[in-house]
Image (cartoon, rainbow, N blue to C red; front, side, top):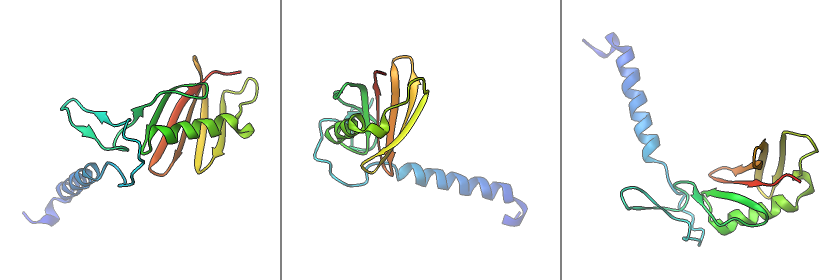
Length: 134
């Protein structure tokens, strides 16, 4: 029984190896944000590096439920401030969706029961928050 007889088995093994490598490669990009107040503690008690998981931050600028991934909370609050101050990011009356760019982030917003849920992202980094609709 050579490899030619079991192409499905080989494909499954290759897929499993790829998944293990992808999962093992997750985590921080190695850049230091200087903001360690947002590190998260898992069930095992270990502290995850900044950027390994989404973390909740103190909200600012009229936004609530601020969460960041791959950046510190201070940088996340900066994105919220830039989004709030950008006229291009305000949604039209009655619109259920909005999109704009702030700094290097592409932001998408969707109407939700509590306001406008906004997600801003660039490669390796993201910020999400909720703002009241005006």
